[in-house]
Amino acid sequence: MFTLAWGAYAIAPYRDEAKPLGALAAAALVAVGLSLVYSSYHALFASVSFFTPVTSGRVTVNKKIGVILLVIAALTALRVAGATTVALGGELLLSDKATVMISAFLLAVFGGGALVKAATDPVKEEVDRLREGPAKEDAKALIASGGKSIGLIERGVLFVFLAAGQPEAASLVLAAKALARAPVDHVNHASKYFLVGTLSSVIASAAMSMAARSAVGLSIL
Picture 1 (tube, rainbow, N blue to C red):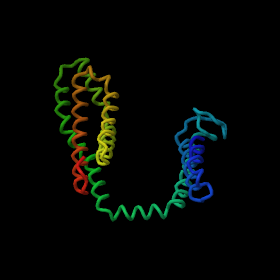
Picture 2: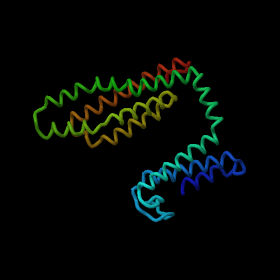
Picture 3: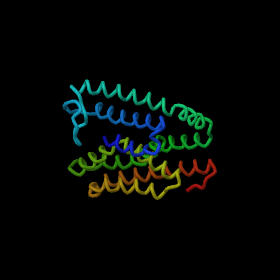
Picture 4: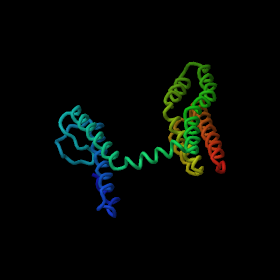
């Protein structure tokens, strides 16, 4: 409902044109489709709640309907923006700058993982050498809770902000992670592990963003 209301407001100046209306329809279909696919609730059809998405019948049926709506949304979006998407895609494929930036992004996100692993492995070894006890178990549990996906997202967001020439925005990523990891500060080795990992991610993202900006003729920051 919010997607439909906000979308109607956004396209109000262009409501007489077909493409904005098609874009609104695609957005509404995506919203309803995702609600059905990810919903685990049983509710009457067309029921409205801020907590329960619109659902119909059993969850398995909902998911099938949701997938169908998402396919229709994709086809609608392709119909509305197909020509523009093809033209933009062609420009990106032929653009040296886009190739450089995308390559640097991939190196920062995935190649940076190797740097992070090399930097944090010694910390893991220190934890393994600790005496058996609560301190060792707590440190190992906190380190295991880190997750590779967090590092991938962190390096990706850092690279995007730095490559866009917005280092101030990149600092917000570090601040958010620091707040999230604040409870582990009392565990020395876990805190050290996250600090080393974060600094390694920053180094990888900063190095690749500076290299990419220099390669396309921009200032390094």
